[in-house]
Image (cartoon, rainbow, N blue to C red; front, side, top):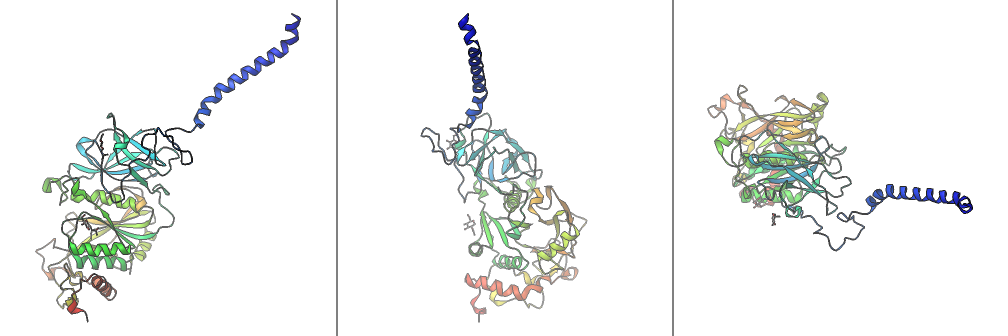
Amino acid sequence: MDIWKKYKGKFIFLLLVGFVFIVVFFIKSPLAYKTIPNLQTPTQDQPQPQHQPPSVCPLRTPGQTIIHLNNTKHLLVSAYMDQRVKHGDVRIIGIFRRDSIQPLLCVFCCNNQLHNSMSPAGILQHSDNFGFPFGTTDVMCAMPQDCKDPSVTLLPDSQNMTPFSQTFLPVQNQESGGKGVNTFQFSFTVCISSLFGNYNNVLQLTQTLEMYRLLGVNRVVIYNTSCGPEVDRVLQSYSQEGFVEVVPWPIDRHLTPSQGWLFSEHGGDLHYYGQLTTLNDCIYRNMDRSHYVLLNDLDEIIMPYQDRNLMSLMNKLQEQHPTAGVFFIENHIFPKKHFEPSGKFHRPQWEGVPGINILEHIYREEPDRRVFHPYKMIVQPSAVEQTSVHSVLKSFRGEVKVPPSVCRIIHVRVALQGHLTKEQLNVDTRLWDFHEELIPRVDEVLTRLGLLNSEGQS
Ligand SMILES: *[C@@H]1O[C@H](CO)[C@@H](O)[C@H](O)[C@H]1NC(C)=O
Ligand SMILES: *[C@@H]1O[C@H](CO)[C@@H](O)[C@H](O)[C@H]1NC(C)=O
C-alpha cells in the first residue's frame, strides 16, 4: 500500500503519456502514409523502381494528326486545356461514330507516368452533322491535380483494357486554359479546313496567300489531305518560310470522307473531308497565339472595303461592338466565266501557270437574299466553344453581321446564278487596288519555284 501510494502519481503520469502517444500515432499515421511517395507515380527526382509497368505512356508522334481509339469506332484529333466551361478542364476533339457512343473513361499521364485514377468522360456531340454517320464530338475530362506535362486518352468503360494499348494526346494550351492570353503572337490567322483531291489551282492559291499577307494575315493553317504537284511545291515553300502551317489530315486513311456537305445527297462517312472537325481544331490550336481567326476557304478573300487592312477593320468593328467575338462576313461570288474586257491583268507570264487569275474576274453576283445566304466568320478564338462552317454552335461573346459595304468575301469560282449576263452583274474592282504590291510578290514566288512562264521574264 505504501508503495502504491508512493508511485501512484508517477503511474498515472505514465498512463497519460502512453494514452497521448497512442492517440497521436493513430491520428497521425494516415497523414504520414500520404506523404510517402506513391510508388505508382514517382516524381522526377525520385528514381523509378525496377518492378514498374512501362512508364512512358505511348504518345502520338508529331505528324500523327488523327488517331484511332482502340476498341472503339472513334477517332481522336487533339486535346486542349479549357477552363471556360464547367464540364471539366480538358477538351478532347474527336470524330465519333454517332450510333456507337459508349461510356468512356479519361486516363491521364502526368510527368510521363500513368496517373492511377480514372474518371468518367463527358461526351458532347456537336449539333451539326448533316446526317453523316460520323460527327465532331468533344470529350471533357477532369484533370488530376498537380499534373505536370499532361497527356490524355480514353478507355471504353467495362472492357478490361490496359491504358498502354491506347495512344495518348498531349494537352495543349496549358498556360491560359482556354481563357485567352494578354499578348498574342499573331493578330490574324486564316484556317483553311481541308485541301483534297488533286487541287492544283496554283495561280489563285499564290495570289490569295499574297493578298492575305497584304491584308495583315500573319499565319495560314491548312489541313492537307492531298493536293496537286505544283500546289504541293508552293505550299512546301510557304511552310518553310513559316507563313503557312500545313497540318497533315489523312482522313481518307480512316474513313470514306464525303466530297459534299449533305449525307442524303453525297453519301460517305463524314461531312466534307472532316471540315467541321478541322475548323474546331484550328480555333483551339490558335486560342493562345492569335487575336483573331478567319474561317474561310482557299478561294475566298475576306476583304475590307473601307479599310486598307484587317487590323484597321477590326479596330473599328470592335469599337462599335466592344462585346462581340464573332463577326459574320457575307459571301459574294465572282463567276470565273466572265472576264474583264480590257485584259489589262491578263499577263503572258502567268499563262503557263495552272489555275485562275483572280484579277481578271471583276463581275460580282448580287446575292439572292431570299434564299439561304452563307456567311463566313472572323472570330476571337477564346470566344468560341464549338463552331460550324457558317455559324458558331456555342460561344461566349456577341455576334455581329458586318455590312457588305464594310467587308465582304471575294469568292472567284463557278457562277452560282449562272443565267446572269455580265450586264446583270456588279462591277467590283476592289482587288485592283492592291495590284501594284500584289503582282511583284506573286511573280517572286512563282519565279523562285520555276513556275513563271520564262517568255514573259525580261
Ligand atoms: C489495341 O489493343 C490491343 C489489346 O487490347 C493491343 O494488342 C494493340 O496493340 C492495341 N493497338 C494499339 C495501336 O495500341
Ligand atoms: C499534302 O498531303 C499529300 C498526301 O499526304 C502529300 O503528298 C503532300 O506532300 C502534302 N503537301 C504538303 C505541302 O504538305
